[in-house]
Length: 186
Ligand SMILES: [Zn+2]
Image 1 (tube, rainbow, N blue to C red):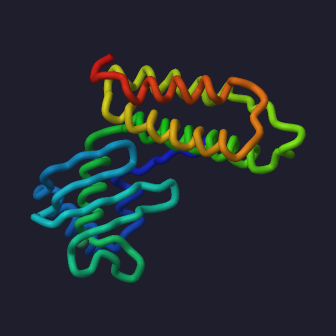
Image 2: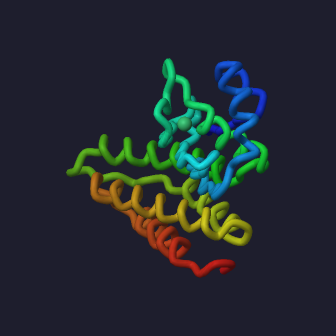
């Protein structure tokens, strides 16, 4: 299972020394910070930044004149990620990575199956991860709803792609849709 592990040290190693030093200074000027899973939004020193933490790097969008210099994210983006890292471990990010692995596997199986023979998806892992989304809803209802919506959208695609012969995926979809619509704290 892919895990997103970004630490202050790994971030430091990944970016230019000067960029990191600027980011450390800018981290004191981060406002309007929010993170849903690995998707971070922040206003850094008055500049809007949006960064997605991927397992293999950062996908940054910044309103500054030079969001990427030589392929490396700008100090605003790094400052936003630094704030995210300092906020502590994010169970939603790890869960999302796990869900994406399982959903990608199901999508590949659906695409490969012979329409005449149909396909019996194994949704055991997906159900386990949905249990975790349910647990997360108690602590981070917004993140859990966002994850559930993501799962519902992907499962809908998978169901459309393959001739699924069991009700398991439809059950998983109903569960994800229920979790997405759950009121805060439910
Ligand atoms: Zn920037």
